[in-house]
Image (cartoon, rainbow over all chains, first blue to last red; front, side):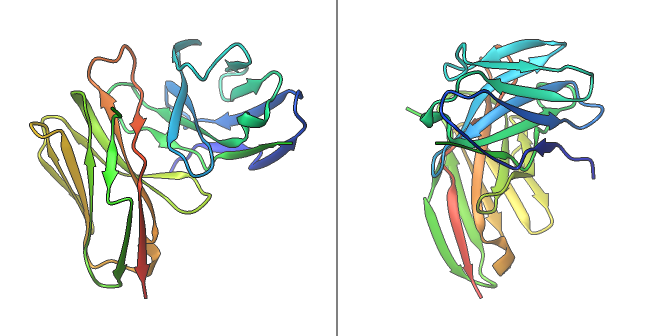
Length: 114
Length: 113
């Protein structure tokens, strides 16, 4: 079964450093998402991306965050200057044709900011 | 108020018993999806139910949706130890400008062997 793959599975970074989390969505999907889950808390929406631009972003997705689809297969989340409170599991997800379709999630990238 | 709240927060049952988890939400939706998450792992999609559907089945899973009460339930029949996980409902709000899911807090299910 096709799946969303994410790398790295776990990253430890120093506060203030830049981090890039990478994702390969399911190949024929058109909509891409990033969510995050702080330990013990809800899964929270960060951003959705379609047709090479952001469709919607949450309040969490401030100027420190950016997304990119650099080469037609990868989808990346960059955090420019990490803070302690950015420590969380970051999930990439994709869906086929948007509204009303199943959203498939990757295994997540666990980010620890020290 | 929060979109997508599950109850109970935690449920412990014996293997072979049925497990029922409930989800309530506040605003009208396009669809509702249930996911499973094993500890520290990714979100595995279980079932999507659309707002015009009332019940769906998939193997040992049965999901109901009552849009008048803004609630959904997930029933796992003949539970197994491997069903131990957190279960989340996620709603696609009708009035949102783009397609995204709002997750509930989840129900932690423990199935005792």
